[in-house]
Length: 383
Image 1 (cartoon, rainbow, N blue to C red):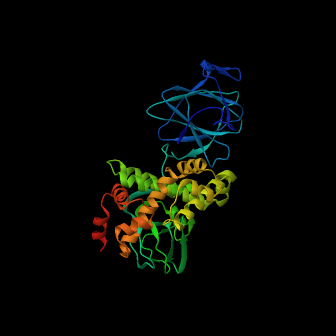
Image 2 (spheres, rainbow, N blue to C red):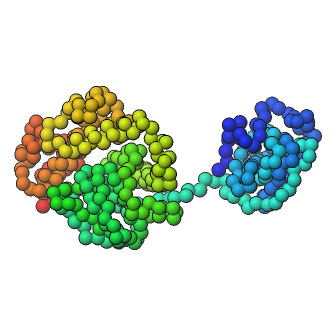
Image 3 (tube, rainbow, N blue to C red):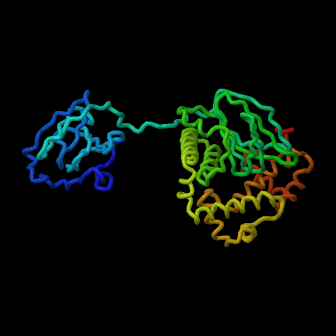
């Protein structure tokens, strides 16, 4: 990647000169040596004294390094004064180009290097998504197991789920996720009395780094949970751009998990005490809502249970989940109603009463707004 040439970015290599500056170290720019930059050979030089460099004609890229291992690339749209003992090379950006150099001692040629790409290349790339489901399972659910050629991500939204792969049984609770690799056999099941709800995605990816994430339990950082929520919302929207948006969001999600896996300490640095406290408040609120979903719930009531004001709880939900706590309660109640319909123990009037809806008509209207079908149509589809 080509970086912007300014004093902050160039710190440690020398000085970026004001664009009006025409000389450096007492050397007149007009007397500087002109170098024709090669498009096939990238020569490495080492400065022996402070060295002035500017772009003559065309577009120039300056690469600099202190150790010879890592080079930083800069678009040479200003003159610079390199410190002594700096490794550098020059190349044209597009087409032909020349550079101007001036120094009391000419730079020393020390070798050559290959032309690295100036483009940002992805380390991990999601190349396609096969399936993206929100799964609502019955109590004691059991999936006997399978393997398939695509990777798979499972994120538990409600309840708990056992993930079995590679000889270990991982208990995934609300907010946990796991990733299975291509052709990795796995099974999932829920304990008796537990009806889990979870997100599954199957996808193709490029980049072996993802292997570090496989068959490990992660408690999803708040940003990852928010991304999954945004992906589900995008799936509901589903316009001509939605699939591309979901693809990009999944790629970002995996990169966040890779950063988490690389340096757990880094997460502690990024997650300040204040943010950690916010996450705990939201998690406790979600857990309370899930445990009391068949009771009459309100934002002030939930706020009291987590010892914050209703306005602060609302602000946190908007900040981290992009919805209000009232909307979150409504969504969880409607998801619960699906489970109750599948169990087929209560009629719609009783379900509405159990979930504290004022009338069955109010319940039916909200169900249709959320899922696009009536409770009756949904019941016919699952029985």
